[in-house]
Amino acid sequence: MRTGTEATRLVIVRGNSASGKSSVAGGLRDAFGRGLALVAQDNLRRVVLRERDRRGAANIGLIDMTARYALDAGYHVVVEGILYADHYGDMLARLSADHRGPTHAYYLHVPFEQTLARHSTKPIADEVGESQLRDWYRELDLLPNVIETVIGADSGLASTVDRIMRDTGLAALPAMES
Image 1 (cartoon, helix red, strand yellow):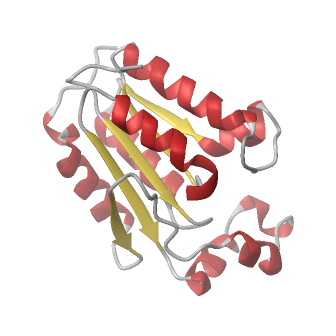
Image 2 (cartoon, helix red, strand yellow):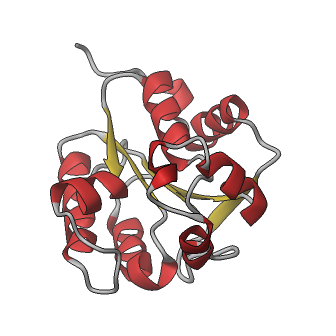
Image 3 (tube, one colour):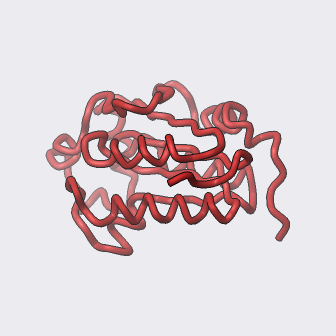
């Protein structure tokens, strides 16, 4: 089912835990302003549904439906999360193929040692230890049916946000009126 318009942008930001996905997504929203919907896997999976990350889980459809709803309402959409390829790949490929406008996908590639250091600064650091983080970590878990741009750990937050704003054309578009 086709979704969005030729003018809407769909941006997918994926990567391992503590790779900077949420910070990049928030930076994109701050840089763009109103009219950019943030569809965050952690919010829908952990907060709304309080669900474990597994194949066939309900959050996969909820992420898809939420992104489509926002695109159909004229919003640009950033879908962000770990979004393992084997759990979310088919949905993301369908969403990308169905989107009428430009779709851009990014994978934030950060080595495990760096994700571990970044994780230690997060609020859940006391709840989630190194062994669990190691179990979650997947080296370059790229989507099989979606072309992703890999952004390395050497790209800082501001430069990553600027790059995505330029690549997607969001930098040249006006925000929605308040």
